[in-house]
Amino acid sequence: MNFGLSKKLQSLPPYLFLEIDKAKRKARAQGRDIIDLGIGDPDQPTPKHIIDILYKASLDPVNHRYALDQGMPVLRRSISHWYNKIFNVSLNPEREILPLIGSKEGIAHFPLAFLNQGDYSLVPDPCYPPYKGGTILAGGKVHLMPLLSSNEFLPDFKKIPKGILRKAKIMFLNYPNNPTGATAGKDFFRDAINFARRHKIIIVSDLAYSQMSYDGYRPPSMLELKGARDTVIEFHSLSKTYNMTGWRVGWACGNENLVSALAKVKSNVDSGIFSAIQLAAVAALEGGFGHMQDMCSLYQERRDLLFKGLNSLGWQANNPKATFYVWIKVPGKYDSIKFAGLILDKADIVVTPGVGFGKYGEGYIRMALTVSKERIKEAVVRLRGLSP
Ligand SMILES: *Cc1c(COP(=O)(O)O)cnc(C)c1O
Image: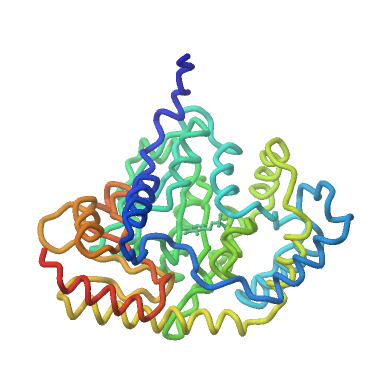
C-alpha cells in the first residue's frame, strides 16, 4: 500500500549524510582502511567521573520513573551556575532555563511554538540541517541567508527582502559555526539583536561550540549583550563540550516567554530526560574546567597539523579559532559531491561535501578533527597522492 508521505515530509531537503554513511560502510566492508573525517562526533570518551555518576544514579529506583518534564531543579541550577561562570550571565533557573534531550530536539521543535502557515525562518546557508527541517515540519518557509567567505561567513541582513522580513518570525544564528568554523564578534551580535528587535524577530542562537576554541579565543554568548533578553533563545549542549553526543542532553535558555513556549511544545511530545542522565549532566557541569582545557589542546594540535598539511598541498582552508571543523575550498573544478567521492575512492578518506549543508556550501568540503594526529598525518600523505 502506498500511504503517501505528507507534503511537509516530502518538501524536506535530501539528507545527504545517510548516503555518505552508506558509501563509508561499503568501503569498510571491502576491507579498506578508511580515515573518517566526515562526522562531527568526538572520538574521545566521556570523562569517567560523569560515567560514575550515571552508574550510581541508575541503581536508584527513584530515577527509574518518569522525570519532571521541565528538568530537575538541581540540573537547572547547575546550568545557571555554569552560565554565570563562563559568560557572566545570570539566568533564573525556574523560568529562563529548559533542559533538552539534546539540543537538536529543542532546535527542531522550537519553530512549532511560533510559526504559522507561511511564516518565514531566516536560515543561514550552509547550516546545521535541523534549522531547515524544523521550520518545514512546522509548516513554515525557509529564507536562506548565504554565508559567504567574502563576508567572513556572516549573514548580511541588508540583503533580506522587505516582503520576507514582514513574514519572518525566527532567525537562526550559529557561532562558532558548523560547518564553516567561522566565529562572530560582539559587534555582529549587537547588530543582529538590534535588527531582530526592530523587525520583531526571534533569534535562535545555537552555541553548541562555545567551549571548543583555540589560541586563547573565547566565544561569547549572545545573552551577554544588552537587549538580548528581549529576543534571544540560546541552545547549548553537553555533546561536544563533554564528549557526550550519545547521551542526549542539552538545554535552551534566555527569554522566558520563548523558553516557556518551547516547554509547552515539548510537554506534548516527550516526557523529559532520564533522571540518571540529568544527574550525570550536573556532575559534568560542576566538574571544573580541566577536561575542557585538555580537550581544546588536543583539538588545537590536530587543527595545526591538518591546516599545515593542507597548506603544503596548496589547498585553501580556514584555520578555525573554534569548533572542530576545517572548511576547505574544493581545488580544481570539481563539485563538492564529486570531490568527496574522489577522495573516498582514491584516498580512502571520508569528508563531507559542503553542499550537504545547503547550496551555498557548494565548492567546499568539511573535515572534522575527530581522529588522532597519526591518522591526520596519514590523511595528508594520502591526499598528496591525489592530483585533482
Ligand atoms: C553538534 C551540534 C549540536 C548539538 O546537538 P545535540 O543534539 O545537543 O547533540 C547543535 N548544533 C550544532 C550546530 C551542532 O553541530
